[in-house]
Image 1: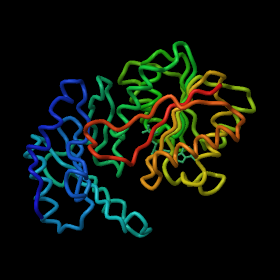
Image 2: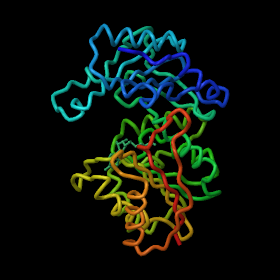
Image 3: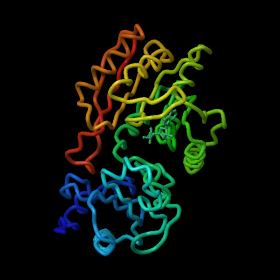
Length: 316
Ligand SMILES: C[S@@+](CC[C@H](N)C(=O)[O-])C[C@H]1O[C@@H](n2cnc3c(N)ncnc32)[C@H](O)[C@@H]1O
């Protein structure tokens, strides 16, 4: 397999650690002919493979990445397109819990813009932080409404909620369907020295929570929507391309007048303009006048990436 010149790639990211970011994408698929991506968290690498390689080739690639980036160990994530749809593919095959090269690291604490995050390189296909959304988390930290209330839906390890709390928000609620990731989020809060009450971590289905919050008359000054492209909730299957508008309408119902909505999708099949129409349709359905303030994009470690779209809307 012809390899891109790894030291050249890695040199392009050289300024990130100096800016307080030690978890980032060291090589994106647009720079490797779609063969692999390399993520770095502290001294540990995570190699995502999109090509079918022999075990020997996998290890050689991991070793080349590890050596070039000066890493202690490299974990492997196998991401062949067909495996994502095959129910019988073993989780441990997709995401081996042991490093494929070098030393084991169960937990790594790495920084994003100076904020520590707990990264678990062997845990799962997702390691605790989606680094493509770093500029969006920075936006939340900077624009969290002073003394205001923030609702972070599909919270995963609560990176957005944590940044809102580190900003000037008074109340931040994180909602997720997984107790495991909410507990992980609480660990992230603790790393930053924040003692948030357990009631800031809401377990359950986002769609049910939005309805419950609306019934209670709870409103928020900033609502963050970052759903997976495809989700299975108690209400059935949810797909970004057909159902995002309805999600926005429910979110608008709990957004205070003058409040903002940060809407994101990583659905590669949705263009920026199609996504904008979906969000606008949801706002209209909710009867809210709104204007689009800004688009946000992944950082320089995702050159040429178009999958992640993020829009900030202000609601009247
Ligand atoms: C792509 S991640 C979201 C990324 C996250 N916003 C972040 O800041 O990194 C998807 C998350 O949505 C959660 N999820 C999926 N369906 C859900 C639902 N119906 N209600 C609540 N959480 C859900 C999953 O448990 C997972 O943590």
